[in-house]
Image (cartoon, rainbow, N blue to C red; front, top):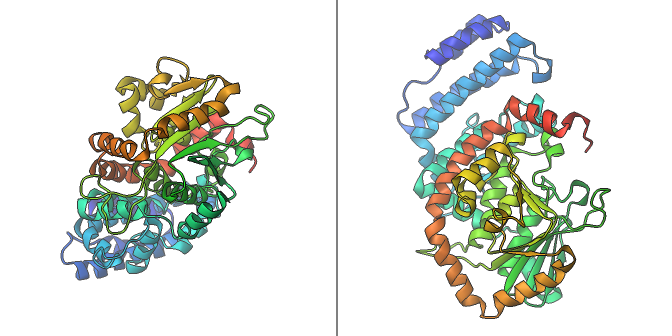
Length: 467
């Protein structure tokens, strides 16, 4: 028995859990980790006991205060044992899941394969699906264990780099669409549309009902479109822009994007893995390009395929869309456009903005934007530290064409070489990996914090929003 499990006994008894089973559970907490196979059995037995006791309690919405305290004690102790096991054995677990790194596994496949290899270490697909049926406030947060697992993987250079590499590979759906786009010059993926216009592949983000916000319905399509735009040989450059929306406040107006779909977030329709898939997937590909299996994308020992990316920033780039702006090679903004990172109002970490924004505006303004919701008008001294050019709203289309011509007139080879040379000094793959480890852990706890719900209700009137 450890202090953590011993302290859990009182709330478990208060909740009416059988005393003998609770004590056996506390006594079964594994001692210091040792050999892998033995630990897999010992820890696995403890996780099974933890799950069995948790199942004795009502679902979270029906628990009283004592039952909720018991559930939190069980989850906390189990999570502590997960960390102990991962600290000792995460390399071996990853190597088994990837056949000693001979196979690439996207992080979503990786965590669910880990659930099969070590039941109880991370939640199964069925356990996550069961929680997904509830609004965010009524979840126990079993996905936090996915965050812990990924944090430990990403913290280790050898396996963390391999996972980053896996997430930079093109999605399986992308390969046939590269040929289709080359032949037709357009692909409609629903939430993302790709169109060839002269030398440029234009990616339009489309979610008009929610002001082009991102959610679980848009993520895969956006990443596929980024893959195709990057790998396409018929164009030299890529442009990202928000489509026109049908909204009373912005009728027919293009909008770059409103960030994460807060309505979906409040209703529990944004899974935790969404954040990691997004930031290690398409957002990282905007910055570093699309990798090949036989080349480590670290800019020194290997490389992938990449293009210059231009953002055409209409109206606003909020939250996640502001994060995407920070990965762009050139930002053209309408004169009335603005940027915000409302992390304080949402209660989550704004992706990799904490790493990237200080490069543009300095530490003080970055902290004001992240901690105090400072709004950055694009046509201001601070906004111009991020935006390269400001154009009148009526001239945005012509300005996009002019920027594309200007950035491609000297050819793509030197542009890509200069892009890599700048990046290697700003955000090496190793720096990205270490930040991703911190992000994986902290975002998991933020995503299931009661403060998230309180913030959304206070700042977003989330109770009265309709899907």
